[in-house]
Amino acid sequence: MSAAEAMETSTILDSREIAKILPHRYPFLLVDRIISLDLEKGLITGQKNLTINESFFQGHFPDVPIMPGVLILEALAQTGGVLLHLRSNTPNKIAVLLNVNNAKFRHPAKPGDVLYLKVEGLHFGSRGGRIRGQALVGDKVAAEAEIAYALVEKDLL
Image (tube, rainbow, N blue to C red; front, side):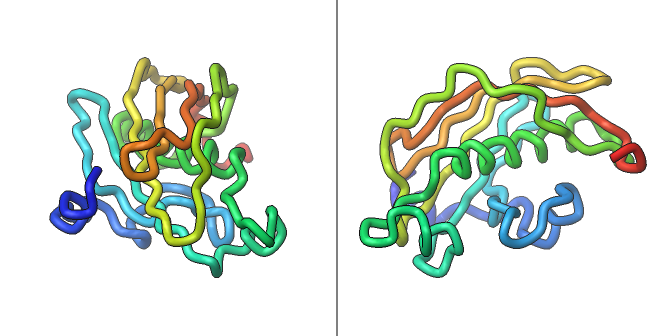
C-alpha cells in the first residue's frame, strides 16, 4: 500500500473497538486499527504504526532497532483473531492460537514504518479457524505465515 493509499484509507475499527474484541492490552495489543474488512470473502487488513517508543525496540538490537519477528507474527495473529471473532459472531469466545505454520521472515520492520497486516481466512468453523497472513512494510513482505485458532469460552481461560 502506497503512502497516498494509506492516507485515503478509512478506519473500520479503531484501537478502542479492537480492544473490545481482543483481550490483549499494552504492550501486547499490536494492532492500531482495522482499515479494511470483508466478512463475506474473509479478508481483513490491520495496521500497526511503529515508533521508536515501542518497548521492544529498547532491547531488540537497540543500536539497529527492528521489530522482533515473533511480534510481527503476533500482530498477524491478532488481526486474524479480529476476523475470526467478527465472522463467528461469538461474543463470549476469544480466538486462542493453536499453531503457526510456514512462517517466513523476509524484511525488517523498523521505527517509523507502518506495518500492514493482510489476512485471508482459509477456514471458519464453530470451534476455530485458520488464516493466511502477510505483514507488509510498503510493498515488501516483512513476514508471512498460516495461523490456526481455537475459539474458547472466555470464562474457561
